[in-house]
Amino acid sequence: MTVTTWTVERAVEELRAAETGRTARRPITDDWPELDVATAYQVQTEFVAARGERVIGVKLGLTSHAKQQRMGIDAPLTGWLTDGMVLAADARVPVGELIHPRVEPEIVFTLGARLQGPGVTPATAMAAVRTVSAGLEVIDSRYRDFRFTLADVIADNASSARFVVGDVTRDPRELDLALEACVLREAGEVVDTATGAAVQGHPANALALAANALADRGLALEEGWLVLTGGLTDAVPFRPGHPITAEFTHLGTVTVG
Ligand code: 0L1
Ligand code: MG
Image 1 (cartoon, rainbow, N blue to C red):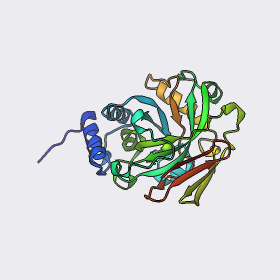
Image 2: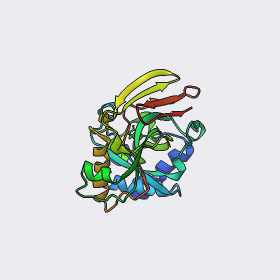
Image 3: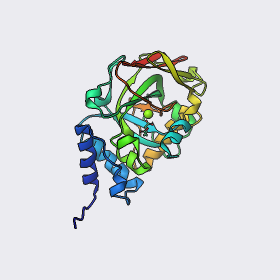
Image 4: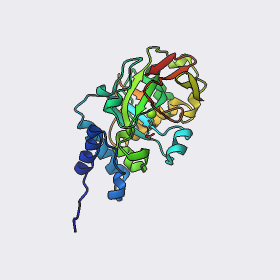
């Protein structure tokens, strides 16, 4: 009989192998059912560190009802953004480096001040925001068929892969981000619509949530960082030759092709 011991290091190796080998695996919790949320965040930190890239921000995942329902998980989570994940505007999705990418529209904050919980409110969160932009996130679960538990997806850095931020920057105090509308198109056809209210009622709530969740681990959001507040709609499977475009009311249009 072979007894396999699971550790944070082992989980990181398995996820890294799936990512670099472009081979989706079964959920880690199938083999390590004891993996809890706190340990999963340790895996996440080490998994991201293994990329050898610079952390430039934070993403929230599963902040909208549409995404929670689709993934069968009713709790938001955070992940790390690195400089290696950035795509230029109108960039091609690097399908040769990914497993099964999906694309989702995001409202993106750039922070003008450090934001540290606990006790961050939506108002104090927004006071730390320098600008708001539109974005598209390319997610790519390292798990087969995007099937996972909350602990699995936390360990997998919230399915992070790539993202693009639009070149329109606005002062968020000039806009009602709950009412900011987004039309998502695939190859020109409308596939979904949403407003910023889909993100926890208002993206400011997601930002406060991120600051307070990081504080539980002794961490903070740093000045200059980007925060992807979570997909407004469900993510659309990316098909080469079918560009995905998010058109926002005031934040401009972002495309990946
Ligand atoms: O950005 C996201 O909302 C992704 C969170 C992880 C769940 C998923 O893979 O959709
Ligand atoms: Mg997202």
